[in-house]
Image (cartoon, rainbow, N blue to C red; front, top):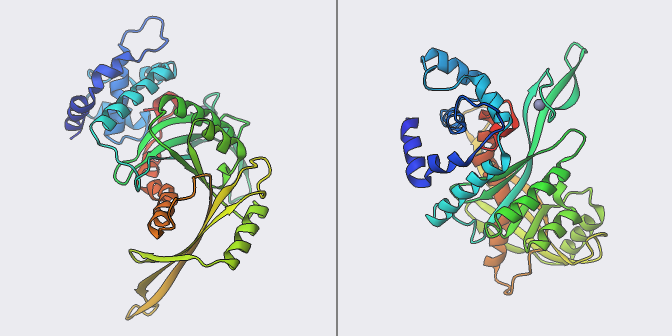
Length: 352
Ligand SMILES: [Zn+2]
């Protein structure tokens, strides 16, 4: 099965010619870097979550001749040049875009930035390990080591594409890491996206300003902690009528407020989009014999510096609300799957 996948990747993306550019810092390499990179690609394509399961497959299937040992893979991956690996990502993106494999989200090219936690382990293995104290059920306290990183994903209706990752280093938070990630993604993929969406954490003037410097707009979730902006939006919602529409099974009541003077530090006018959503559904009743109707309600608030639509057309607003939601749609479609199956034990492997 994965032979087909490899052949396809090579035909469409010229994969094996572009990964030749990756080098590492071994002094007297016995095995070419490209062989190691290929082994890592095979590991991911065949959904083996870690070097450990790769090593089991190697001995089970008698592949010692074909695949380098996992200790060689780990050692080499540790010293691979990250910029060269990112260069491969850029090439693949270019090909995918040229061949029209990527599509915009509701007419807009949208990027999603988010923090993710990866492996946890009782042992500290590298300089990227963060640590926390975990209290077990019996009250014993253990130190747990883990890795965190921020990821930038190009959101699409069918395919979402991971453009880059950045570790969250010990002692720093998600925003510091995302700041490096966003600067680099804006530089490496200047035309790939127009809008960046993040959760409540990204409602920061540093993030909005950084992206504005690169001519990108930001959408961030508004949470109650941001009291002034939150309360002002609620006050305005009481004073004005929402736009009402239905999309698929969900009924929307949406307000689109322009607010200034409620966000110290940013100082410019922003739009706050409030969406109250009700989705009726039918579920089995408790006795299991009949059905009952229920209503799922969701209230969303987003802050954005997207320019106000020129028309008062409801379709424009519908589209904006769909774009705001796209972050949560791709979460299940793309990243969780990858993260759950990725247990590779060092940073460089991850970039692939
Ligand atoms: Zn580590």
